[in-house]
Length: 102
Image 1 (cartoon, rainbow, N blue to C red):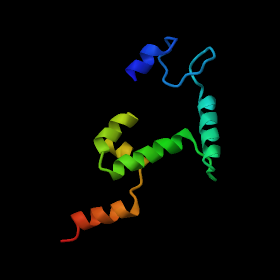
Image 2 (cartoon, rainbow, N blue to C red):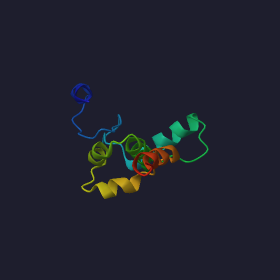
Image 3 (cartoon, one colour):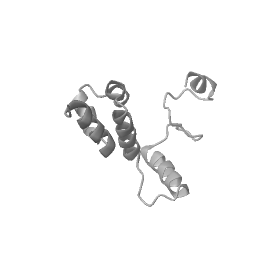
Image 4 (cartoon, helix red, strand yellow):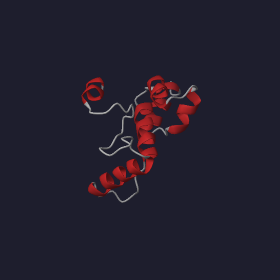
C-alpha cells in the first residue's frame, strides 16, 4: 500500500480513486464497479459493498479472528462485530462439539 500511495500521480489520501478530478471515487462509482464485477461473474444476486463487508466478517469470524476483525471493521465492542457475521453450520457444529460435548 505504501508503494502504491508513493507511486500514484496525485496526493488524494483516498484508497479508491479515479483518473478524473476530484480523484476520490464516489459511493455510486464504487457501487458501479461492484455491479460490473458481479455481471462478469454471472452472479444472479445484486452485490453491494456492504455484502462484501459482511462476507469478510463471516469468513474471518469463522476462522476465529474476532479481535483482528474488530480492528478491521473499526468496532469498539466485540458484540458489534459479532452482529456482522453468521457462523456457518459446520463452524457452529464444531463449536458445539468442542464446548458442550464431553
